[in-house]
Length: 103
Image (cartoon, rainbow, N blue to C red; front, side):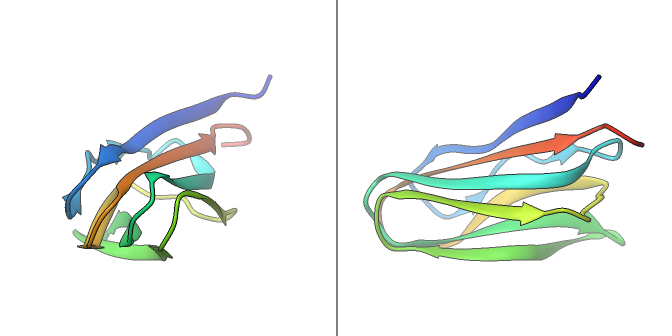
């Protein structure tokens, strides 16, 4: 049986800053969706807690409404979060799905 772990890392964010962090030690093979529902410009970072600090594993610049899919097939982290590191305008969300299969 396949089992997915779904997280909302940011929802309708309209300013810079980090969203909630999630413990994900038992999950791997991530798919992230960066979605912009109101057109705007921002840099959205997917971050992982490694070695006692946050590290950017992917940085996505957005300049219009729509979505971007980011695959991280080998990622296996203690914690993950999304962070808007540069914000000009728009409404941005980040969704993550990982698997607990074959752990």
